[in-house]
Length: 246
View 1 (cartoon, rainbow, N blue to C red):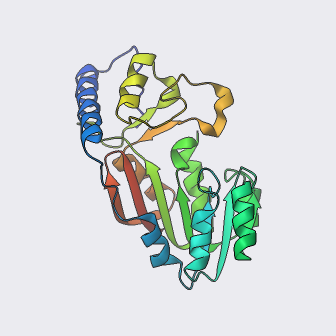
View 2 (cartoon, one colour):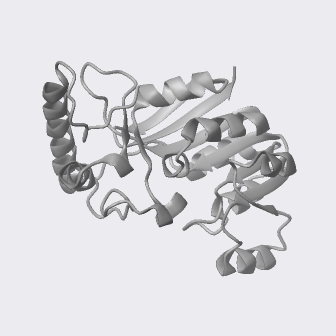
């Protein structure tokens, strides 16, 4: 179920749910300002745990990380490593690739495109972090990831707290009016998020935050796309999930 909190036609109980939701966000914003929320196991630990002896692909490998996860997987003993991104390889990635004499293969392209998925091919371990909520079609992304996952998917995404009385809730960020959008942005102080801390513009493309996905919605999407969840880590504003093909 998708909830647009900017809708003018309110179902019975809608306003009460919105008020509860607003209180939740305000509470978490205050907690985040006072305490660093522990997001669970470090990503490096997960890479080392799953990459050794396995083929490994990082989907969305460039943005702000410059292939770091792909290089770590290679360093951790992966049999082969692929990096995928709609962005071109960054200068930092190219420099580190040369410094390491790395064998990481880079595949340019959009994961939504089935031809890109064909070029990537199946891998034992699929890593995808910080991508799902940037896609206007998150279920399609998960279906594409399922097509290349032989054994394990490690998926990290920003999330929203559960909406009281409404399991499986999502928020469509571009559709929110300014007051509601600011409410959500205030829960993530210091985070730059197009379409969340600023009005949505279609030209933002994948830079925009498209969806706020609750944990229950994420589980449902994974199940619908052919995954079974084995582990969950993180807090109300972030989830890292270990899943396997169902």
